[in-house]
Length: 455
Image 1 (tube, rainbow, N blue to C red):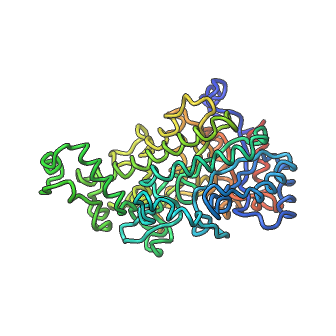
Image 2 (image 1 turned 180 degrees about the horizontal axis):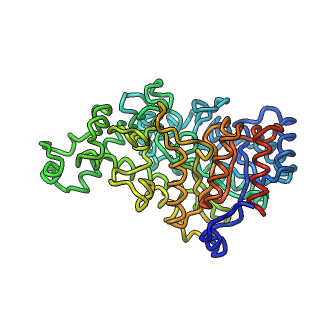
Image 3 (image 1 turned 120 degrees about the vertical axis):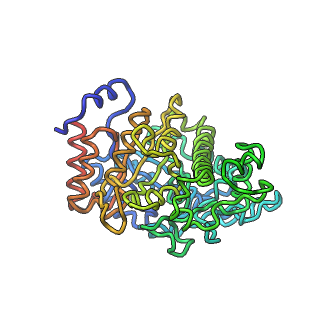
């Protein structure tokens, strides 16, 4: 039997967390239903509870606004229910394709890019623009929320109406908040042509007209006058309209300005808070959309384990997380601020009075610390930081493996087991179904973990 700390038992009996949940991710798109049904049967046999399924906005509402086609999901949900498993739908407001492990190509609904032209909103206004001038079409940028949020709500309401009769079979609804369904900026994605790819510092994504305008407005609100801003920044601006995000991201990081200058801290904190505000708007929209049908079902969202550059010994330390928007500039990083994650964990905590419950999901549970490698990774340490901060803020946190290959070897499972022995995480979702239904290491170790956590 796995030993659990005394405080774990206290949390369990006080109602903060529920029994351990064991889920698996369905394929990005099911193309072989016979094989899918076979895998579901095995998953049920080893003790899996539910299957997370991406509900692709670009698949269901592809042809036109308010034209929904649910036939694919009718079939997939039928298979999951027939296997005696729960459904965990992901409201996938991001494209399928372009991320690690993606084997499908489902872009966002093509009509969305021109949908707000009559309101003076061009396609470029809806897209993230990086410090290198490249635009991303993987998700709609958060600075366009005021226009696109009603579209998200309509989609979620249509889903709720379509599947209201299946409420008892749905255990949690996840809300996509960015690329790969994660609450982050597309800081290491393909639109920058590999320049920001793992394990680099990433790239800042706040260079669209709307983003720059928001940055200027935030600084005007903070300082009230250009004179006050200049005094803080040690600059000589004559108008707020002259302000911009860093013009040279490389030197901004390499010089240490991100942490050690007033301008850098203001920029990083604004960038981070813009992301958190987006997350709050997305959760609020979901609560509105699911206030009738599917009311009472837990909501969840995911943040990524961006573990590289954490062990860097120069000013690039933590830079990949900065570019993704996950942490603030607050120094020193310590347990008191969740080593930078207090804010993003606090997003879930802010909805702590919501009766249906908000679940935070975090990736990279299978990974090792590799501080001396090219990645300068502290993945295992990061998983511990996040779990401890969630416990401190009384947030339910559940884990995932970051890469499918991570659950095909013993070391990955040893790391996962160690996470659950510490007791901060209350559930596991394995990427993907195939990795734990093939009769191999993944299947055996997941079954063992499930049995141990339920003793």
